[in-house]
Length: 194
Image 1 (cartoon, one colour):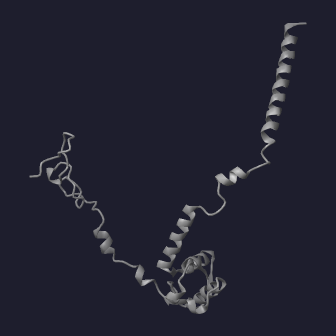
Image 2 (cartoon, rainbow, N blue to C red; image 1 turned 30 degrees about the vertical axis):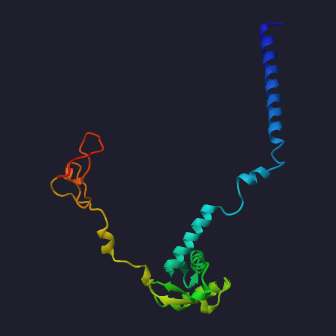
C-alpha cells in the first residue's frame, strides 16, 4: 500500500470522526432546549418592570399638567391614535371629587373645535367617563406659559468681555485670584483674597 493511499484513508476516517462528533454534540446541545424554561421566567420577569411603571407615571402626570390637544392629535375632526393616547393619559387616575377635567383645545383653525371636543367626549365615554367629567376650553393652557425673559436671565452668557478674558456672566476668570480659586501650587489653600 502506498503512502498516499494511507494518508487519504486516514484523512477520510478523521473527517468521518469529526462529522460524527459534531452530530453528537449538536444532538446533545439541542435535546434539552424545549423541556424546561421556568428559570428564564424567574430571570426575565413577565410583568411590567419598575422603570416602565415610573415612565408611565411621568407621562400621565405631564399630560394632566399640560392637558392640551393640538391639531396633531386629530385627523380632521376625529381623534387619531396619538390623540387617543393623549386623552387616556390626561384622564388616567383622575380624581372624581375634584370635578371635571379641563382639556384645552389649541388649534389655529377654530371652526372645528366643537366637533373635535365631541370626539374627545366620545373617547372619554369609551373609557367609562360621563360627558360631565370633561370640560373644554378653546386655546392653550394658561398655566403652562412663562416669560422668555425669565429663562434668558438664567442662561450663561456666550459673549466675551472684549479683553480676551473670561466669558461674561460666568463669574469665573481663571487668571484672577478674585475668584477664590487656586492659581497654582495644587494645595488646598488656593489663591489669596485681596
